[in-house]
Image 1 (cartoon, rainbow, N blue to C red):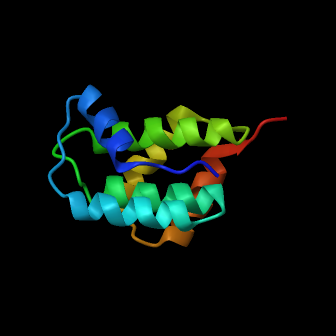
Image 2: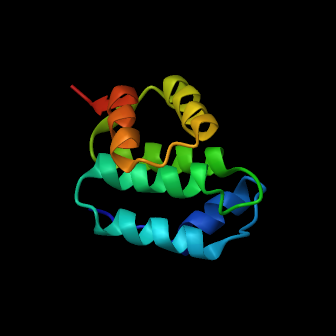
Length: 114
């Protein structure tokens, strides 16, 4: 599986107009995502770390959506981006921290291409 770098995520967020405010939150979610072999669970760690824990001042959701859609595409998985954005907004509102629940939700919005 592709390894994620903190620098890449920070640069992506900067392009959207954000700035890093909590590096340790980002380091932890990247470490966990890189250890995970299952792409859904790996992306769930990123969702929790970026959308729920807010390591950036702004553009957390946009950064996370762009990142996980691209990672899923590399694995032949297509996301319903509209459903994904709506669903991840709900994850943020619910302050959902359970990686397994987030992973299950990602499976609803992102499926293997036929």
